[in-house]
Structure formats: C-alpha cells, structure tokens
Image (cartoon, rainbow, N blue to C red):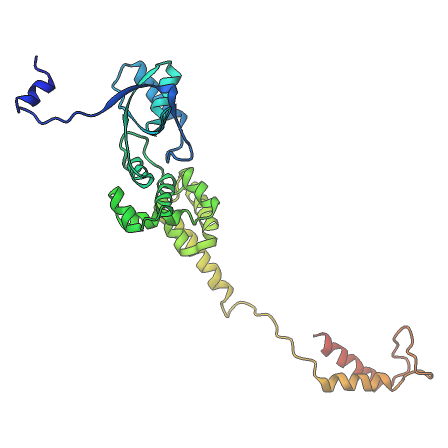
Length: 286
C-alpha cells in the first residue's frame, strides 16, 4: 500500500505536511484571561467520552511563549479531558502571529465549542482595543461589519439583560432590538415580556411578547393623558391684595401694648368681619 509521501512524489496527489507535535497535556498552560471561550464542564465530559471511545481527537493549537511555556490557543476542553482521563500525551500544532491574529483564529475555530454572543463580543472588543477598526475586525473573522457592531453593542447592555441572554430567556438579536428602543428601561421590558411568555407556557421571549408589553405600556400612557380622565385642580393664586386685606382686618383688633395673644380668636370681630376673615382663609387654603 502506497503512503501519502509516495503518492505525492509521483504527482498523483497534492498534500502538505504540517508540523504536528505530541506534547504532555499537563505541560500546556490555559490562560482564562486570553482564551476567549470559558471552560464548560459538560464540554470537557464530551471529550472525555470521545477519548474513552477511542474516537479521533483533533489536535489542539498552542502558542509558544517561552522555552518552557506553551499556551493553549484552541482546545482547552480537550486538554482538560486528557488530563482528567490520565492520558499523558496530546496532539498539538503550533500557531504563530500577533495577538490580534491569534484572537481572530480563536474566533474562527470550528473545533472549539461554539462561541456565545458575549464571548464573541468580548473577542471583538479585544481586537478593537488592539487598534483594529470594525471593518478590519469583520474582514479578519469573515463576518459583516454590522455583526461586529451589534456584538459590541451587547457590552453596553445592563447586567440584568446580559443575564437574561446568557440564561436563554431571550436571543441576543431580540435583546438588541429592545435595548435600542428602550435603553435603560430595556431590562424592565424584557422582564415583563418574560412574564407574558410564561403565561403562554413558554420559557423564551420572542418579538410577539415584547410587542404585547409595548402595547400595554402605550395604552397605559394614553389612558393617563386622556382628557376624559379627572384632571388635577389648578390652585388659584392668593393675590397680594387679599393678603393685605386679611392683615388689615386682623390688625384692627390688635391688643393694647402691641403684643398679639398666644391664641387667635374671632371674639372681638363683627359678624361681617368674621365672614370676610373666614372667606379669605378658605381662599388661601384652596
């Protein structure tokens, strides 16, 4: 049986040799601050089962930091699975490039667990911080500029909304629509929409549930501003002329010596004066 090398030499096939290494899994460094994917125990279990079944395990990608330091760029779950299963050696391929290029590689990797919306957003942000424009980021990962901008907007959301997305209560695309429309009120809208969804026996908010909440809010605002609703009574100002008249009447019965009594009494006033005083007091209180 011919080998790949023999077939290549005969010109019967086109093949490229890659630098694949066998390294100790325990020697590989996993940096949670650099790796854009979070470690998921269930994904580690998936690869452990694959190892036990003897299935093919793709090589992990590593980046050499120093003579004795190799950092995992892609494949942290496979590395953790090898260590957990007591399998000492793991296939690895070295990758070189700038930080921005390495991040782009991690984003595009099809071997690792699919990125969550926020993992992708954080990766885009890191490339942005390294000086790349939205267009350059999009070109490097094979996505549209709108995709880059939409994911970056996720990082502006309140934490309550991020939790709703992470827990699967609303898609990141629908959450973006709500956030654009309602800004700081978006978490309240999503929470109310989730109640509507639960009332229907659903566990995920859709556009229909959001629209139901928005319609309810619009109706409440309309009812509040409707002319048929009782309007607050506008208080008439108690004018200066009335104030002077009240002082004038009260002062007319000032006790001798110029000192006011501790308690006020209408005893010394005529019936006509009493009626006018009461009327002025009522108008002042209205």
